[in-house]
Length: 290
Image (tube, rainbow, N blue to C red; front, side, top):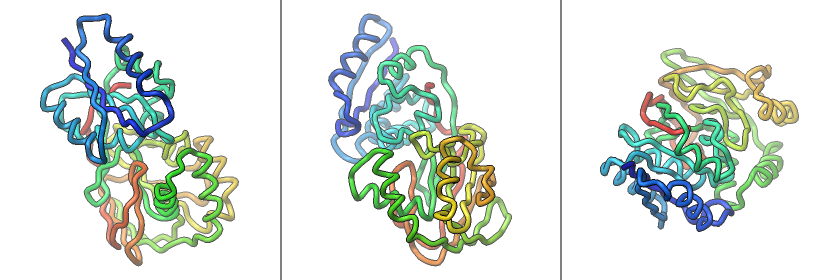
């Protein structure tokens, strides 16, 4: 009998969680091959602790039902275990689910848990904070912090907030080291990508491979607001790496030195970190079902 646990964030998304659970039971409940467990998170960090518990109990699959924050918590709890991560995406961005081509339709996402294949993927770490999708500094980190503080989710609200701030923001100076190579840049933002997109099919690193043992480093240079329409189109057409204002690198160990403490973002979360930031790839750390 395969034991599957579902860790559900009750406040993510707009869909009725009771109807989702009813469908899960419909798909799996008719077979004696599965034993289902549902856990509803109560606070931040709860998903991580429960995922650790289920992994120690050797559940075959633990499914995150929520957005990128929930997925990050559950995934961290399953790292270096034999338990696979499943995802039923319920957030506003759903970056990891979209990169893995998991349907935003919860019924199709549930079906993947039975019919999908497993893949071993990497993670990244920024000053020790684990991320599975992207992390970064600069303009997108500022917007991420403001977006989280505002509390209104969705791509539309993110674009509106970015449009208001983009003309005010100026590029910052960064000292960068990628696997021993040193250089300086004046950048609007720097993204460290394990997966190809921020979420909502906004592809910041179109060539990123989540299982290749590398992080893609994307540097947007100059005053991005002057090229905002072109950049916006390229983000949605998977062609940002072709823009003349963009540089792309790949690395395993990256360090950034900036003028002062400032914001960073990682998998939709935001925080303030110091002048010196270390980023590294954490290879082959998690099994996912896609």
